[in-house]
Length: 121
Image (cartoon, rainbow, N blue to C red):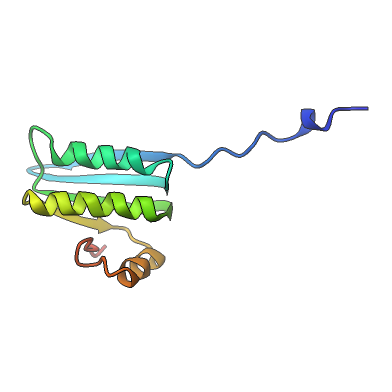
């Protein structure tokens, strides 16, 4: 009799987060985000955003492209909110691009569209 666990598929791994930065001189930075922004991956996004906002050569405008984000949870929204507050406090522009209809509706329901403006495509 064979062991059923031998033929079993490995447990599904949680979707990771991929971050890619593009600098457009003189001072625009676009952060492309792909994957899930959840409890496990939000700290990685938070660090990346914080690093960009406190870099030696700070950016005048930071756009976060979320067109390839498959899920965003409360921790992900909090990471974006924190970065937007920091950006506003230090005189940087901060916006989102590539938002799904679902995310736009969620931001509107949570009254976050002023703090997290959505840039037209």
